[in-house]
Length: 494
Image 1 (tube, rainbow, N blue to C red):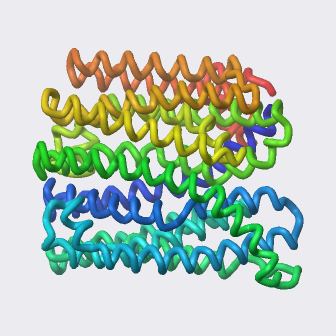
Image 2: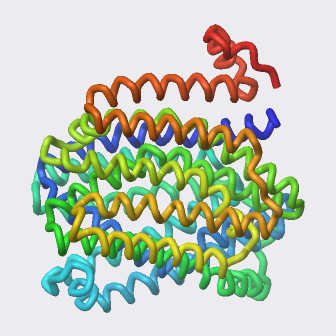
């Protein structure tokens, strides 16, 4: 068990380090953008990004997930890896160009449907270029993930965030509101260019380049699984886009900006957990799927570590939500604090459910993945639409919690059927401890914000201590020796 924990912690620490840099860089980027663009501008930034992501989810045809799975299945077979890599590269180029051209041609109806204004058609045309770059980035990440290049993934994340922020902020400072589109596009451009650099640095394969006929089975798999994964990913991002559109149309641009602020903070602060799952856990689980018992152990180890590491961050964010929003954005965004707390509650369920959801990807159960994502999107949109007129901006937060409560229940049932999964006592205990700390902190914030901050800070420290106790045996020796001086931590042994 200690070796499994050690491997998970290593990958999470690498991805977590890059996430910390991204959070720091994002603090500067979001602060400057919020001061220049205001809530209405930030709302447009969010809907532009989501439009590109929705288009990329459709155009990429599941190439990231399928490519990672094929490379992980190839294992140490050099020839099989070369075949998978070449098939992935050719498919990515064709899909990126095709998707970009189609969105450009459909720019007028898309502008009217999503933005409610046909005069935004030229902007949507530029977003088609960003969408094509995102498709290329998906393929690059699939390649690096399938080859277990966790360090390279972290470097791409850090360098692209820094370069994208420098270029985007410079454009805002020079051209102010007129630079909004450039601010949106520099991020996918920087990520693609940095990713391309690290892909080119991969060691050259010793096996000869395979002929095109050997790539056909790979493309058949892409077509078979890719369609289901594409539909699943598309309905998920389309659901988020629909929620943004509902908020913007019914509550206005200011509320859309508040929603985008809460969503961005929520995604950034748990990003290191979710990225680590995609970068390290997914290929490990794919390799373990031949043994149901081993696959179940892999899921439980990942769930336990993810919950332990995320706990202090989740509770701390709930406790200090108003101050975090004001620090990262501006006082105009204070209404986002209440929504952020609902988002964090949903994030706890999301972190618990994601290790189970990856079973569907690792097992190649595309239809089950598609139906699960469709169900989640339907719940998110339905609850938001039904509650928005009565509860305002809180509605998407309640919908987010409801969505991942349903998601957790469905993925648990599917995991039990596919690999005979049963949660380990350690994973259940981690979920209960973090959940109770989160619930107690949220309750205290209703009594008084300062009281909630004090209780939440103490709870976050307690969760950090609990995580150190549980994971002490898997930490690197220097860090383990340092934490051994903390009361109770040094007594734990593998």
